[in-house]
Amino acid sequence: MKNLQSDLSSVVRLNIGGKKFCTTTDTLTQREPDSMLAAMFSGRHTLCQDSDKGYVFVDRDGKHFRHILNWLRDGVVPTLEEYQYSELLREAEYYQLLGLIDGIYAVLNKKKEVDEFHTELTRTDIIKCIQSEKVRFRGVNLSGLDLSKLDLSYVDFSYACLKNVFFSRANLQCAKFRDVDAEASIFHNATLRECEFTGANLRGALLAGACLQSANLQDACLVDSSLCGADLRTAHLQNADLTNANLEGAVLEGANLKGAKLNNANLKGANLQRAYLRHVNLRDTHLEGARLDGANLLGAIR
Image 1 (cartoon, rainbow, N blue to C red):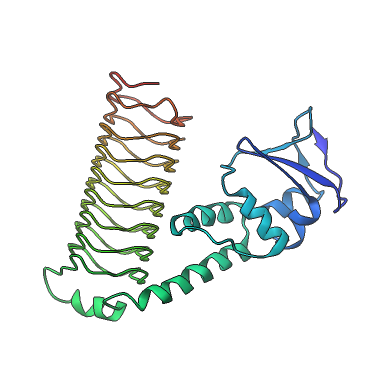
Image 2 (image 1 turned 135 degrees about the vertical axis):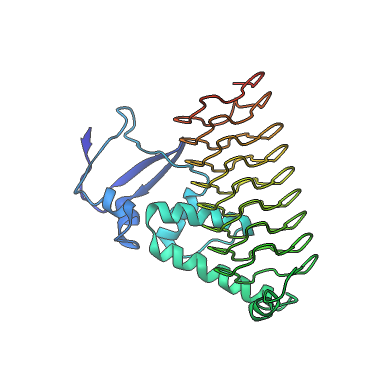
């Protein structure tokens, strides 16, 4: 253990999940003084460095950390693909970078305003429609709409374009999302119990804290999505692509993952009790602290 000096010009070496970076305490502390990084390198704390080259290890994915550093250096939000903003947002929230969080939301809101010029309905239109029974938006372009906190249970969105739609805290129980394009949409803390997502594109979607009990996600694309703490009990995930997905702390008790792709998926601390994982390739899956009691692992590659 070594005490880091409070000299703001000193060089700091960081190991973020195996990716190595060099910066200065000035960069880490000045732009976002209330952040976790500023607190770590304020000189008030003792940090653990490796004995060889003095790298400070942080157990996070280093994929977007260069964007974190560039924000701290220049104050500019990077230009990214739609689904990557949700990934960067998770990292900004972890490091408590409030300015970057506001900047990302400003970019997303501006994009949403542009998308709304092309969308076929507004939030007000949706609210009027859901007063009636058997509401269907099949094949409709709703990109960028804010549909958060609405009761959209049993609504049929099949084949719709739902890119960047805000569904946070919405009630979507038994809604249908068959073959939708919902890339980078936000379902944070939404109720999605018994929903149908068969063949849906949910690449980069934010589903953290969502209730997906008994949801049908067969053949869905969930690459780079966030399902941290999501409730996926008895969910159907046959042949779903969960490459690079973050399912840390998710509940997958009794879920069917037959044929699912879990390359580099994060299942740390997940509950996989009685889950069906026969012949699933778990070799590159992060399962530290996961509960696997009663899981069917016959033929699984580990």
